[in-house]
Length: 243
Length: 269
Ligand SMILES: Nc1ncnc2c1ncn2[C@@H]1O[C@H](COP(=O)(O)OP(=O)(O)OP(=O)(O)O)[C@@H](O)[C@H]1O
Ligand SMILES: [Mg+2]
Image 1 (tube, chains in turn yellow, red):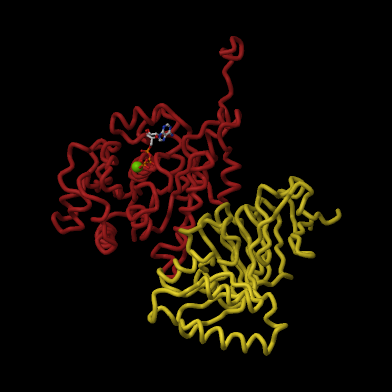
Image 2 (spheres, rainbow over the protein chains, first blue to last red):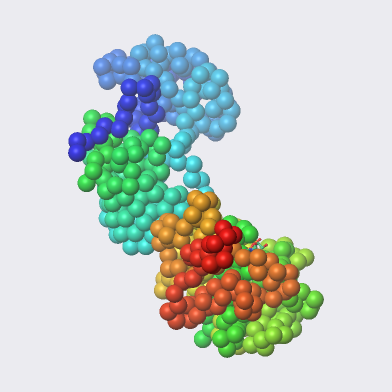
């Protein structure tokens, strides 16, 4: 059977994906915008290609104890005049954030460090479940993974020999193998390893994802439901193929 | 050595208290010294189903708080003197149960009783997690419908991580599936999940199937654990369950629709 590209179909006008993007961070050591303008202009002129159209996040952490406001309109205009594109701020306190927001900047969450955050957040509303991180590379699980359980194989593969229930979640930096039914979620390559794969003997998943490219149950084709399959990425599209 | 059994479910109203009473009575009928504890502080009704509600003087919380001794609070069953009930308090809130307190009471009960059955409240709050924390065995009561199965699954996840056995790295709690309020006819009509469906989802050892039965209501109205009703199908099913729990091989009953008798076949009854 030929591989099935499950997405995008002709009628789909958009697709929401989560992934990590590298952003330049502009760390403000003080809020004197005249000095910032002078020094930044020099830097950009030294390496114009590097900075051209680069998205920038403004790091406000150092300003928190110094000041409660900043002229974000002016700062944004400055960045744009230098060919940068300011996208948001982070690390600031409430008042600074408010100022940034009214100037049309996004207030970004604190550093994204947990791999779970890399998963499509809108599709993972599992707040009360606790994440069990299994250290030491690849891990083998021989008990059913129940609703509400989240297992994360940091730095390796996750191999499960028992059913994974609806409402359970598997995460791995590497591949995920399930030698049974997958009714919950499986997210492989959560740190961005796009060559990781998911293998399972009975696909009934709520969600499958590789490196942040995901697909939800509703969009799984009937022809592969309940079948032994492997899931991988090809040219940015999630491919689900009979085993 | 006593064995602590928690009767749990996640979802409410599926038959935990009915099962706790029937199971405890079944163990006592087999000759074991058995205690049954109501962990549903604030909503006690085990004593009603056991028919001893008018003999409650002290309760579980009194014992935990040191306001009564265990012997003062335990109510001995009038039908089986090897069966005792530790009722819940109706007036306290669930916060009165503490882990140390529960452990102390269970330890003291273990000196006398061979089996200790814990009737868990619904939900995943304190009362329920304390009821399961010290358990050796868990009977997961499930109705053949999706939400109940899902909640049981969730409960099994909690059992596997938040129990004394899990925390101390001991042999895990033995988990049993008890399917209650089962109606083969409604399964045929597609209104309920079948035994096979539920087992497929939960992949758990099936301890028994209790049919939906009017005798359960009349038993609880009269304060008689349904196990004592020899004519009741549910009572028979609970007896089978106890025998299976004790290690006997007993075929499952009440799983198929009853064959219609000659009379109803002739007259389409
Ligand atoms: N096999 C059965 N057939 C018919 N009715 C039943 C059966 N088992 C339980 N019931 C009925 O279901 C209702 C709930 O039972 P029960 O109180 O045992 O559930 P529970 O799980 O303890 O509830 P809670 O979560 O509120 O503690 C009662 O009215 C009981 O009579
Ligand atoms: Mg109850």
